[in-house]
Amino acid sequence: MPETPPMVDDDLRADLAAYFALTSATELPASVARMGSATLRARRRSWWPGAAKPALALLGAAAVVVGGIALTRGHLGGGTVASQTALSSAPDLSRAASGGAAAGGQSPVPAAGALITYPGVQTAVVQTALGIGMFEATGRGSAVVSANRARSMAVAAFTGSEGAGVAVLSWVVFSAPSSPSTCLCWVVDVLVAPPSVQPVVGSTGARSVLILVDSRTGAVVTGAAGPGIP
Amino acid sequence: MSPAVAPPAESDSSFDELLNAQRRRLYGIAYSILRDHSDAEDALQEAMFKAWRAWGTVRTRQAGPAWLARICVNHCINRRRGLRLRGPAVAPSDREAAAVDPRFSGRLVDLDRSYRRLSPRQRAAVVLHYHYGYSIDECADLMGCGAGSVRTHLARAIASMRKEMANA
Image (cartoon, rainbow over all chains, first blue to last red; front, side):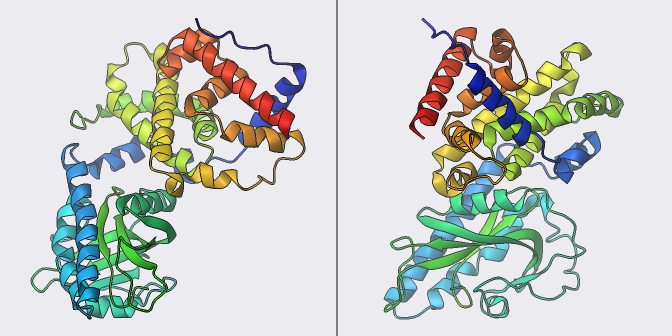
């Protein structure tokens, strides 16, 4: 027997009216104000086939886990070479995960601008050591997924994550020896506590992993840990 | 999932017309269920993408507003559930709950705190019935459940909010 909804007294009714008047009086976000069949049709172009989307997202998450395991072995072995080795597959993965959304693999890499600034991350070192160049996204188009959603995806992708840093939109160039690829990605630094990633001997324990989220589909493209990343 | 099939271009104008008329209401519903602007923005875009793809299946244009609201409500409820399942690290509304919204003062602070603790379905029932004025039967139709369930959600939501405000 369903419960009968209680009579709402005048005080509560007035409070609810004031409350919803305040919460619904906000200005519409630009993307909502502009939303229409034209913008939705454009969104469809970056829509993945239903079966491929979760599988490729899983691949991205698996790469992050592999990176974490390799990092652990590297530390146990007394070096950090393993983390670089594990991440050497990142360009291939990124091409697979980005699918039609990224410009990768179809055309030569366009001239990139300045490297982005990300708190705590030495982007120049990451580019040199890991082959992931993170450049300013100016002129590279706009993101379909929001920064907030990208952070959520990054956190959800890594078991044991303790939070995420800011999301910075970046034109990412993966430098593979044969065919470089590119992707407009959200860069998110995810804090990971042991035992997900083995700490450096003598450190405070927590480390972070740089997660790249495709700005058009929201899928995790790859993760990186190693030189230049705290 | 069925493959994405775009509706014919000629139906775009009727869809846009409907969306323009309902845009603010739909965003208000999405925000009231999710209580996070970024999340509401994303959820509404995803819901409207679903709606746009299925627009050709709507038999009569008069049914459009309710049909659009139904897609929005259910998408937001499911999305909010997903955020809760993934834990507090990715539930912006939970993070926000600790902070006091500067727009509120007095009893509205307590009301806001208690409202945020409601389940997605309870939030949906409260905002649809008490703010947008949908009847119990209309709420049931929008939420995809029975009228009895809506009554139960409302009763528990009101009781919870009363209790929370009395203890504040």
